Image: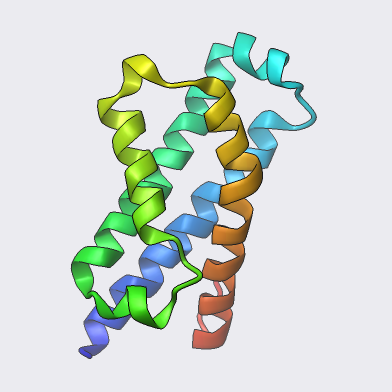
Length: 123
């Protein structure tokens, strides 16, 4: 695989970590009700999740090999969520968005961090 493709892959993994790291600061210790009422917060979280999905799409476009090499990095699922947020914006269930950031995003970020650490380019 070309070196520049590997570098792009690592850059997109960094984007996953950077944007995913923003989410806890937005939601802090909010209850679901507080989250749902706070439009600025749920829109900020929404945008972060969209970017995780867009970074995932870009990784998949680089090479199918990344899906095979990193099965714990849920690229297709993140991209599907991005598509739902972007194109199905009028039907978004904030409960699903909240569940996504609580249950789906942390393991994805953990895997991206592990990939970066193993590459020697964690920063």
